[in-house]
Length: 138
Image (cartoon, rainbow, N blue to C red; front, side):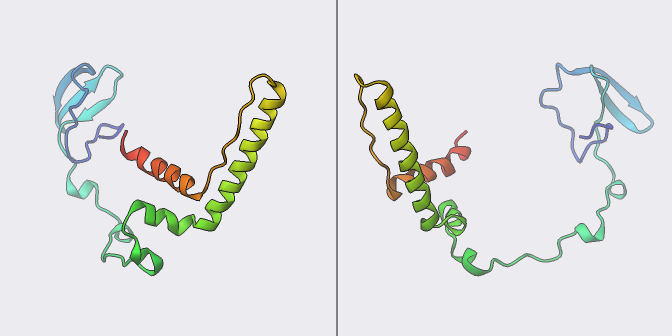
């Protein structure tokens, strides 16, 4: 549905029971008026009202080319953008920052010394895998 009261093909009823203040029938069809004043159409818009421009019509399916042909998983597609060389740099910088942070802590707290355990490529790949999986589990 649009802000101007036109439906995009179907009436959306989820969450409308408490929001609908009035229901009217006009020459243009049945409408719902929300408490906020927005008018929502109960019927889909007609085909001639939403004709697509010819440039926006997909007339053929695209073809997957190059290295993307071999992608079998989300992780494979990630590896097309971030390879092991880049991940090695991330591991090095992570270890450098971790070591610096632990050294600073140990200087400030000599009675509570902590030992930094550096990460490696395998741990970084596991972490990236978790990050890639995370958005799909919410």
